[in-house]
Image (cartoon, rainbow, N blue to C red; front, side, top):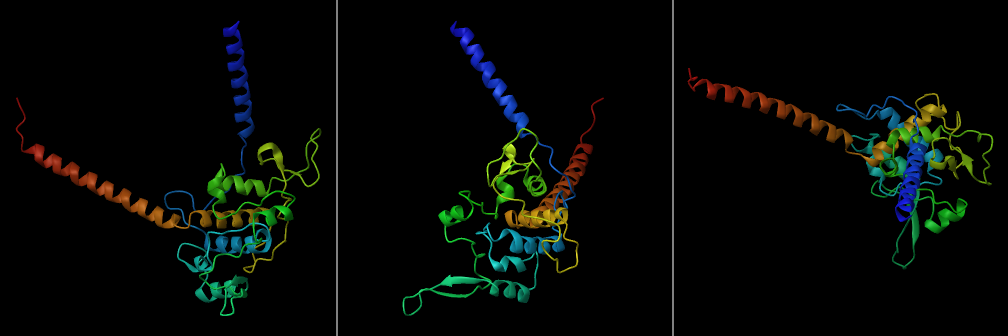
Length: 258
């Protein structure tokens, strides 16, 4: 009887695990990412447009606490000019101090300042979003299974719920979200931003641009790493060739036994 009970438990666990894994297997939307592969590089235009989408759409709820305004002008990133980065920083106000009177004050942000947070603290963020905390987007792509493909798909995955699925108030259906329920309403719609470079701001284009920006935020040294990896491969190839010819020369001096 005990053995039968154990077998039933194992079968039940296996069934639940299989169902869970099958629920997790979602075919994400695919697109060509410029940063993928050994020679991958970030598209500068996409990074700058992605920053615009983040600023105008996402920054009202989501923070990027690990980024400073000076990063926007660094090599390998959006590569705004220093003057442009300074102007971007100056458009935000930060709290500083205390001053000589012991009081806090506000001032325009500088290149050395971190990105301005949308809320003062976690509880304020939850209160403004129906109890759900908007995650920081600095390393969001690395923290989510599926990476860039997941974020890209999620932004385009909003749809009407299928027949039989009921959603609570403030909850939305997204076919790429685990459980298909998300408290964030669809953040993007065609033309919600006006790209300064004239690119058409479709949902698909904005999704790709902001995802590219988030990928850079999570891995700002990706290009340098790719270059280092390529150099290492070339070095190993050269070393292998030299070793091969050295061994061939050495063994050529050894008389072959008859």
